[in-house]
Image (cartoon, rainbow, N blue to C red; front, top):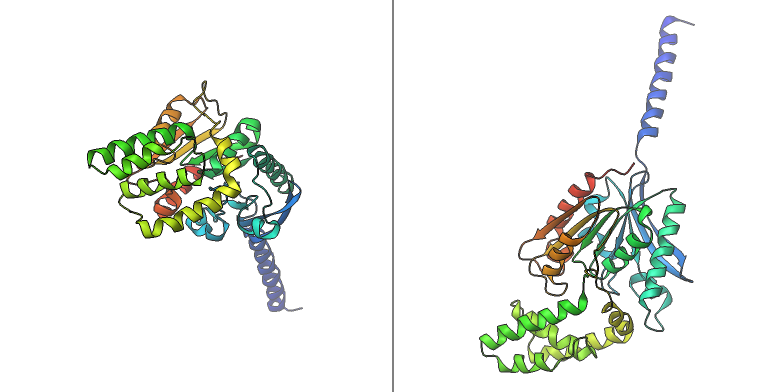
Length: 324
């Protein structure tokens, strides 16, 4: 064998080993979705990101408003540094399409689903902990998981958190009545004074929503209100039972204790989950580490109203975490 051929063989072996090492180091990307048996039914989850990175479970709002179909608005920025899991909850998205919804779920059932999914994720991906990111209604499930399974949650991010729904709605009605009385809109004042809080029906909900929209510069005119009312009535038929159970939640009762790192995102124009309650909750919670971020001139729907800035901030705060 000549020296030249020996060198060629050596170089070939060397290059093969180098390529093999690079292949081993190449992060394994995941982009898949499937149904998991949760709570006795097939529930949809989608996974995007890097296999061996920390897991982020996103809990959508609503209830009934799955976010997996528009994850680019919520979690796309995280997919290079985390493994992001979206879950279409019972009665939402592809889980709804697969199973239908025969009766309104209870809060206890939704909490049980969330616990079962948490157990599945930890077991399937061989993890000790995950990160929770939750929006609006989803924060009710996130708070429940952080309180019942504190050792399994490394970081909790709550966006527009539901702190005290009853207090939020009462405060909103007072704000609206004061505003419309000042500008001499007697129709608005009379309708707002006539609604029930807690809501008794979809009409109460729709009327308050109508005048909140006008207050925020997006009026709903009479010819369109019937369409909104029909939507609220359809939604209330599915979710009225659960929604009324949310009135029982008061995160300001006693001194809130959340063992894991806790981060709050809130809009300073949020009257649905009143922004003042988010500020008060932040001051009162007892936790090892807490941060709060205000989105200026943003209402309740931060993922829709401020998607880019929300994702940029979300990535920044999560990358600061210790997930060993």
